[in-house]
Image 1 (tube, rainbow, N blue to C red):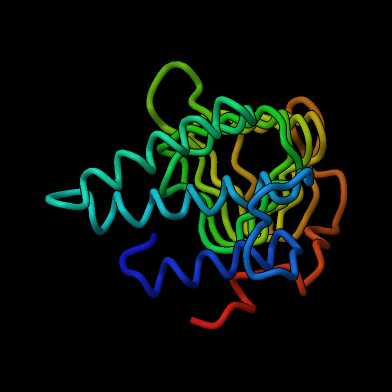
Image 2 (cartoon, rainbow, N blue to C red; image 1 turned 120 degrees about the horizontal axis):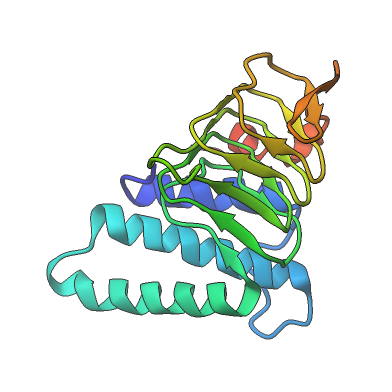
Length: 198
């Protein structure tokens, strides 16, 4: 969780590395999908910073402006990621519908694809706790109070309704079950939380 300006800078750098961009900032006017996603994630992190550190007094107005800008980006992209859910090194692969419950908690270096959902089961407010270095493929659904170990790959269109306690494996299917001994092979040079200087 971002608790100060130094944390904000670390999260922004970790996310930049995870997104695989070499520039220091996105283009002001761009035709690239990567810039749109990067701008979204920057707004997300700035909202986290203001929410956690500067939401009162004279900072209330810039915080409200940031909230509005993030909301407009969510409407445009279909990406609904609440603040204070994902750890550093978060990366969204493509623009597309993503729905994440604000009570979920996800560790560092998570890769998230479109058409995914991390939500409640409809009977209570419990949501997922997801470890570090987890790769969530296109169309995956993670429903209810489940725990997912570090290094897990959740296959495309999988539905996870039970905890995955074994690290570094791949799960898939409906309901999701272990299908491979191999876990997240996302390149280590894109695991921003491990590379960015704090």
